[in-house]
Length: 267
Image (tube, rainbow, N blue to C red; front, side, top):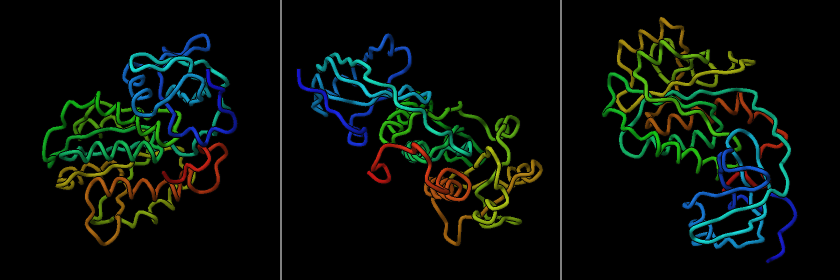
């Protein structure tokens, strides 16, 4: 058996795996067959090497691989890493589902950017009805969390109609990416939300919001915020808006203790 690697965990970011709590018991971890194949054939992992495992609820472990074959992989827990400081702002992203692979991209980037909850939406001008991609979307969230050093998975809500979303939205204030009448630039809108523990960010689809939808948002007290002079694709708008919100209100405002493995700023 090869000697276990020692030292910090920053160099292990490419050997970081999501394992649900049910596969972690008595200090032993059982990886899925798909993970075993990836570990053996792609990453070329071997028994005795170190890796990181997180369970999606905030817990993370440094582990030693004890078995790696294309069909089976297992590890033993070496230590549980210290808990991270909770983010100062809980962000719900409500996104009208765009066509093609754009929603997959939004899900991955929203996970990397630290959203707490994601709500896929169907609107009056949706170019297509949201496909039943919940299982695939969950996989995208797991893979993005693995890559980004994130320990908890965002909650993925079922696809909702716009009307159902307005009836059930629970994280106020409601911040809407819309440069319509009465809107303010997004940074200006954010300055008025300092100290809010949570918010919902709503991003429209390719066709934008219908007039009836904007009227309903105004009646609900939504804050309309513009994203500059250029017309952005819906997936670009979501990522740009989340970056601004995190920079002005969230965990980008200063160094956060335990904000991720060393060297995690860019990969």
